[in-house]
Image: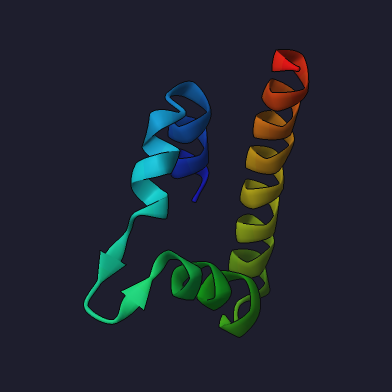
Length: 67
């Protein structure tokens, strides 16, 4: 998760590729829910939370700078 977040912050176009993720019946939403809610390991849930929070803050600040 950390590598993906770092890569997405460095190259934001990778985030769009991630949003388009689909594997069989699984979508990006399924992946996120699996990491944030359904995973039994607290460390993995925390990593997902921290990663998504970092992306949200970064992309949110970029949008506010563009306005």
